[in-house]
Length: 74
Image (tube, rainbow, N blue to C red; front, side):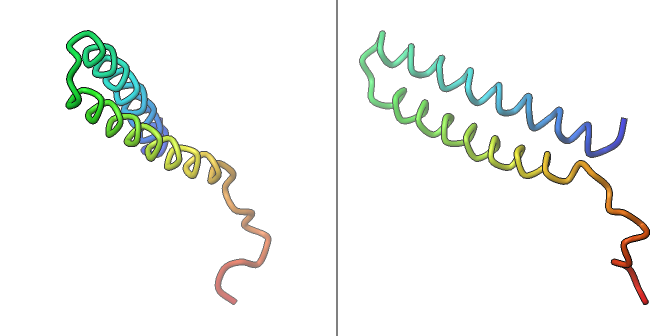
């Protein structure tokens, strides 16, 4: 397993954690009627979205550059 693969796995787990935490805070705030839970849920969901955008940028670099393309030193 390469370092990039391990990084992608950890980012995916972090996205799942943030989404689960947001759902948990949202359901808790609805039961208790507090505004703090809604704010924590919104921040956690924003974190999940930011990490998802970052994860998508990591997927774009899967193909290694072609060594014969002349992109190196001349």
